[in-house]
Length: 185
Ligand code: FES
Image (tube, rainbow, N blue to C red):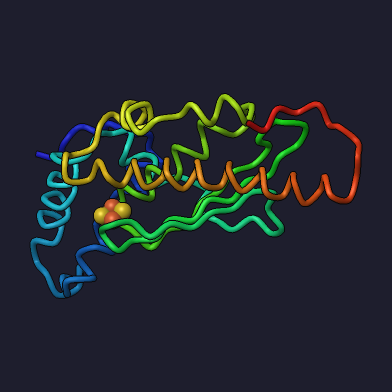
């Protein structure tokens, strides 16, 4: 019997598409596999046995895995696993008006980047600096131990991108004496 849907129809459809693409990646195609639907269900079941609905929903649906042209803040970090995360920030008057990410990493790193963007958008710079891997892990409904470093990579990259704002602020300051009243510490 087919499992009861746990996500919105749109996300359940995206999950099925993800499963079909994953199966195609290992050479299992609908046209050539009589019990393809079973394979698909098994693939979805095994994903669900490892990741929370929050993590699955985020990596399937985030629209923030994109580049921001001329960002105010930017950082790129390659983690110990060899995967790279980039974070882009747009700032206005001390508020993060836009945040996006790009990664060549695993699905949890995509979920972590998407969740970071969701959390910090509209947030003050100083508040965003307080974000920790644990807060991110909670928002993702947890990650398996062996993927907790993916959340840490997203947070480290965010912190570095926030730090890069100080450099652009110093560059600005060398051209103007106007104080914008924002505490960048
Ligand atoms: S970021 Fe490298 S395994 Fe997740």
